Picture 1: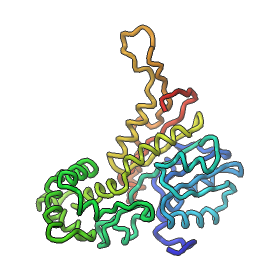
Picture 2: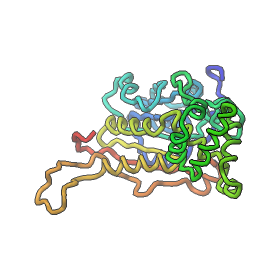
Picture 3: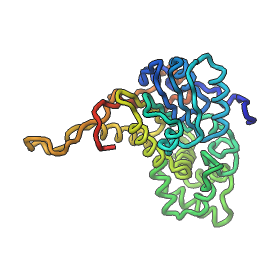
Length: 328
């Protein structure tokens, strides 16, 4: 995409927009950070709630997404200042230091893997398009790609990745099929991978549960981009940067992400952890967060019918408490 050209890939409907705005409770003078800017679907609505004293920070590691987002925000009626930063939210500390702000009032993480840049066939994320096995979120920075993972990792490592990151029932069989195939010729395209996955899964299992390669593609993509490590770093940094009373909202799309968000929120919302028979507290553990979603919010049936991207989305949100302590 040429710089400044807004393509259809970046016009997708933001997932659970009303729920996101309710969770963030944006004031006109807020500092809001959209850590997964994409084409600015959520950020446009956030900017519309900010006044001239508000600041919107948008982060994305994809140049095309940043270009599309900049065009949309500049064309909007918002009077808020916006700063768009190229980078990975795993490096949130470094990125926010560039903006020279003392804190942030609201953070949004939309972890959707169906973001517009991933839909471009040549990037190798889709099992529906034949393309080189790449899967890097930021090809200009990352060197490890999907082809290297599939053609060099041991069978044991491939099994672990597929089982852990893809929750793939047939991880061992698929890993064995990958190793067998690459002994004949290296896997080079997404079509090669789909073919191998189908060979590794029993015929009866291939007829149920969606595309048979979906979990394998998810697992390889997570490995290539170290997504869970990045998410943990990004969430920890965001909570450190939150002003007292500030809010964090996370949209996840698969159980691995959701469990990580749930675990971190629960841990930081926990108070005293002393044994119940102690007469006084000695741990000095005080909660940092208050969870405002007792159960994760899901998209309404109406939204799912209108926007299939929302089908597996779950929202968890929390508020930074005013009490500060050393756990972070």
